[in-house]
Length: 462
Image (cartoon, rainbow, N blue to C red; front, side, top):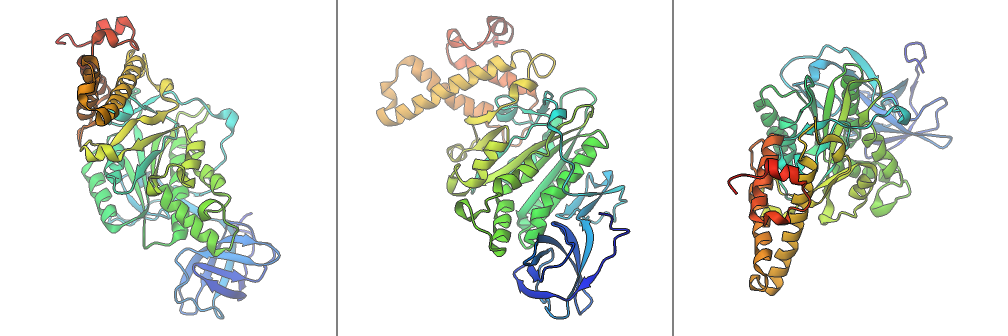
């Protein structure tokens, strides 16, 4: 399809307008996801995208909505092209809307290239294993559920949690430990409020030296824009990674808002619903987003992804987090009990998991004792949590002295290791604090750590 040589035609065949959709009679030679120009009698020109094209009807989703649209005199032009976004390295440090257009006060962009937002499919054979550690500055992630370049590691959060603060902290503080490797961050906010947007802009402006591109889609914006926003941002990420050889971390906040928009569009199209009203192709649609992360053989760049998903009613079996868990490589789980205990970030390491952690830690990447230390901290904290539950039922007096040590360890581990407020920690600081918390339990119980590491790293003051 070449839009420069293919003729275009305008049609006055709108049968009906429903919500953000316009329904036309079946039109010959129309393609799925084709972009259309909509010319209104008052001179306005809006854009839309073909959602359905068959012998029965042609359905177009209008980006700006159909308010004040007149059915009879409105003309629809099919462009013979898909949605393309103008890209430039100048987008780093800028604020864009969900369609990739600058909305800050820094002037227009010099567009280097226009690419379709569907992206190029990644050949599975050419995928390479993620192996380089990304330091987020948060001990609960770096020490226990490490993020690796090319990984897709979601955060499952709950309503009322300080999710924006945690997400902004990761965006501002993340860096690659490998020498001579910079990290560009793309922060994608979908369905956020004006207050959240101001918070993110302020945080990113305060982060001097951080390479952050901010794509923002607000609650009052079109739901069609919300569907396009992650794909626009991912196209930019792929452009940086595979054409400019950059390492990119992209945060998508919040995939629940995206999925709700997808469900709304599916309902407007009167599609047969799947689980809880979501379209039956929800899994496939999410996969087209998540699977754009990774590393490609022969390319020095990479795309690492942190999707953020709110669990409705704290239900991890909800379709969006459930399907996300199938596609991605682990999960980080926010915890309401941790929030009540004033732990920041309120993240519970026990149900969290990073399936690629072992690929990115160890000698030459973080530190030789990292894996052993993480295993010991997990085991000791898990035991302490079980004893805390037992003590809440039978009373602390029912515990022996060793059990009380593990109970004390759980408290110290939460207050000193997980809890760090706004402080950024290096991986060295994280591992050092981890060793310090272990001094609360008997040294003879450190059975998950090699003796040579105990001799080398165990605090001498203990």
